Length: 107
Length: 120
Image 1 (cartoon, rainbow over the protein chains, first blue to last red):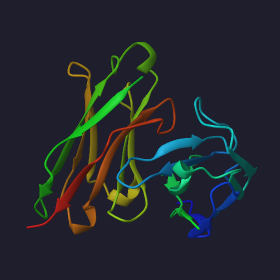
Image 2: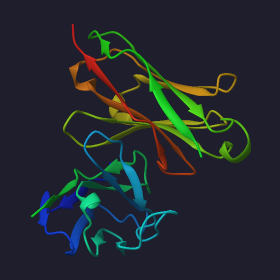
Image 3: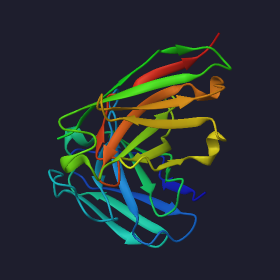
């Protein structure tokens, strides 16, 4: 099973600032990586796939990069609605696995 | 756009079977734009991370997470536009919010989730 490791576990950021989240895979996953956002009491929401492709309707302040084993997810200018937990997920090999999440908190 | 709603008991006794249903609306589960969708179950222990436990195509092809050690069965009921999960021999470790999800390949659409507690 591919292990996904996210860092940091929590990140304190002021509104309007940039947030950078990392995700590392235990083996090469090419660019088969997705990112999800989860707010309290809600299901997760798909924000990114193929490491850097935004689904329709996802704002451009969200961006992703990386390939192989190292990935980065960036929120360029944090809005109040962006404070949430973010999960990365690999889908190159079954079972598909998630990282443990990074909580983006208001500073 | 597909909409999903989980239903089932919120409490199951240890060693018994957990059965959940996901009702699909917004289109036919077996036709049209949904015919190539994958229908999934993802669970999340309260306060913890996500686990993708199974996925199924409209053809009936399934993939189950090996961590469940053969306890999981998923099925599709096209006549009622829904799909189901059956998890046998549950323990406290199966206590979680269970989400049904769907999408072309990933979890594009999610139900609101249903909390299932395994307890006597």
